[in-house]
Structure formats: structure tokens, C-alpha cells
Length: 109
Image 1 (tube, rainbow, N blue to C red):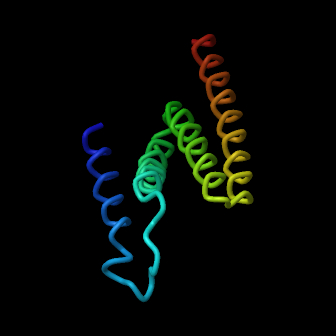
Image 2: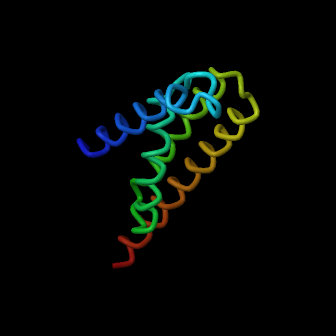
């Protein structure tokens, strides 16, 4: 957990300073750099958990999708907010499906 927090802080700090370092590319500061970095870092970590087929990855995806949904609606990007709300529903269904399948394996053994 401390490693994740330090990566979130590092990437958030980097994102919050891009408009200072590259003013021609990023003329406005990032509105929510630490929330954006949380979404990025946790998405990468959760992808590796999915490779290992961990059921817990779906819980983290739900948290990521809820945070992203809120962020996009807060920024006024309603299309992306709706998209991430749909991702939340998909992740919730996947969690339910994986738990159901996991329970069926433990009953047959």
C-alpha cells in the first residue's frame, strides 16, 4: 500500500506541474491531478491483478470506475461519466459472476 500512495503522489505531482514545464502543450493546469493519477496507477495495478486472476481486482475496478465517473461528471464530461458508469455496472456484474463461479468450485471439491 505505501508504494501505491507514493506512485500516486509522484504522478499527481508530475501532472500538476506539466503546464509549468511545457506551457506550449499544456497551457492550463490540471484540474484534478491527484485523482487522475489515482485512476491511472490503480488501473495499471488492477490490470496486473487481473492477469493473476484475483477476484479482488473487480472490487478495485468498481472503486476506480466510481471515482472516474464522479470526476468526469464534476469536470462536465458527461459522455465519459456515462461511459465509466457503464464500466462500473460491467465490473459489478463481473465481480458477481466471479464470486458465483468461485463458490461453485469450492462446492465440487
